Figure 1 (cartoon, rainbow, N blue to C red):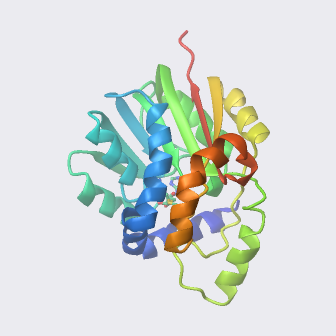
Figure 2 (figure 1 turned 60 degrees about the horizontal axis):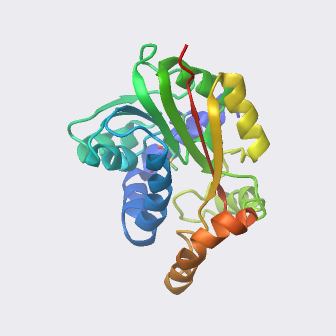
Length: 243
Ligand SMILES: C[S@@+](CC[C@H](N)C(=O)[O-])C[C@H]1O[C@@H](n2cnc3c(N)ncnc32)[C@H](O)[C@@H]1O
C-alpha cells in the first residue's frame, strides 16, 4: 500500500471520527464490536499494560480498562484519537503509525489491534515493532478481515461505492489487503512470536438489517466453529518468548 493510500486512510478517519464512533458504539455495531473484543480479551493478559494499535475512538481501550488493566492507544488519525481521549480520560494516547511505534522496548504486557491490519502498508514492520515493545512473555492479538468467500467482493464494492459517492463509514477504496491463515501465521513466525493461535470470527455483520442480524448472531458460534469459511474476520494471537 502506498504512502498516498495511507494518507487517504488518515484523512478518511479524521473526517468520519464522529460517525464511526456512533456506528460501532450503538445497536448492531456495538454487538459486532463486543463480539470481536470478547475474543481478543480472552487471549490477552488481564490487569496488564496494553497497547492498542489503531485504537480508533478507544472502544477496545475502554473495554480493557473496565476489567482492571491500564491501556495506551496509538492511531494515525488525530480526530479518532481526540474521541478516544474523551472516552477514556485516564488513558494515554498518541498519534502515530503501527509501523513505527513511539514507545520503548519491552514496555507492554499485551498488544491488541482490532480491524486495522488490512490497512497497514508494511505488516512485517508493524509486527516487528509490536515484538520490540512487548515484554518477554507478553501476548499479542490481532483481528482483521480475512481472505474469504464473503470478503472477496468487498474491494470491488468499495471501489464502486467510492465512485458513486455512497455515504458509508468505510465505503472507500484504500487498497486493503485481506489475509488468509497461512499468511498470518508466516508473518507472526517471521516476527518472532510463538504459541500462535488462529480463530475465525464474525458472521453477524453490522450492515445486516435487524431480524437477519439477530438470526446471524444466534448461529454465529456454530459458523465460527463448524463452517469457518463463512466467518469473515481472522483473529491471530501469539506470545513473545521469554529468553
Ligand atoms: C476500522 S477502524 C478500527 C478502530 C478501532 N481499532 C476499533 O476497533 O474500533 C481502523 C483504524 O485504524 C487506524 N489505522 C489505519 N492504519 C493505521 C496504521 N498504519 N497505524 C495506526 N493506525 C492505523 C485508522 O486511523 C482507524 O482509526
